[in-house]
Length: 351
Ligand SMILES: C[S@@+](CC[C@H](N)C(=O)[O-])C[C@H]1O[C@@H](n2cnc3c(N)ncnc32)[C@H](O)[C@@H]1O
Image 1: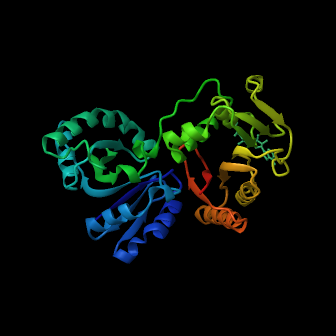
Image 2: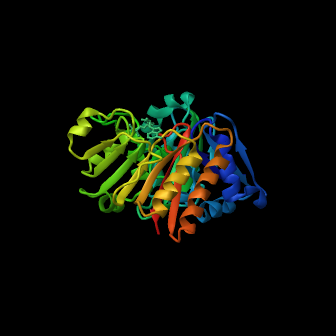
Image 3: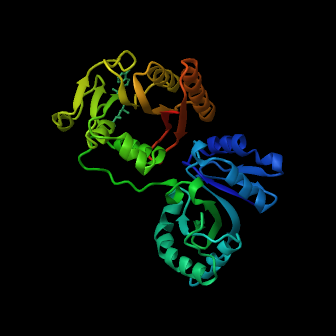
């Protein structure tokens, strides 16, 4: 059996499996899903490899919420000799019969696999070199190779479409916390901008002089991301904002309830990180968009409840319905980012 490997945040295997069932329904192709709590990955098994490959190519990566990264698993390697790992891994990759233009060494995001990081780094170059020798490499290929080390001598290997998967190994962008930022939450918005916008969109849609509202802004990590791009921000929060951020001259701090605040004029961006029931946030963001108060929005949905996948779907459905009832066209995407905890982040953009 071959299949698909999905990486997710540990503790969210159930959500990832429900999503996989709804997106791909492998059972209808004679396959099944395996989700082990705490594994930080979910595996889909199909009777034939072309079925897994077809499922991967047919499903749009941007539509996945709880999966951080994925690949078509084409082989399993176990019991590797510690002094000869590169060649067997390259040979296993070659069984996919698909040349690749890059290679990701990954591990599931668990405490017990953290020790494998140096090994992954050390193996990358030798495996690429072996792969080149046996004709498995092509700089022009639209496919990428994946080696998921599950232990020091065991791995799952496979391939993914470069344009239909995450751009970072394991779906984890390595972001450095900027020392001047007032809170670690800043990394959430930075990752959201990297995930939902292309480089060109980041340049065009985040221009100096634009205007934004940040609901639930204190102490200012999200506002900081906008201010560093010279965007004017109305920061709405009853809590205190970072003093240096206020000194930038680009921030107006409004001590108010984010559910009551209305802007005097439409803004380019609404961002919202208020700790509130997700459905209330979804309705609020939909209202902002429907009324034309903002052109785009990035918002975080906190998920303290049990049925988290169902709740996210309910919230996104609510946004879509409210927007279309207002006669507007928009697309909403949502992802559990690496820097998200019991939460997901969504992006609403006009169509
Ligand atoms: C997770 S923190 C925001 C962190 C912020 N994004 C950052 O990067 O520093 C949530 C904030 O939402 C604010 N908040 C919660 N409910 C609110 C409401 N109804 N109106 C305005 N702010 C609210 C809280 O005061 C708190 O500062």
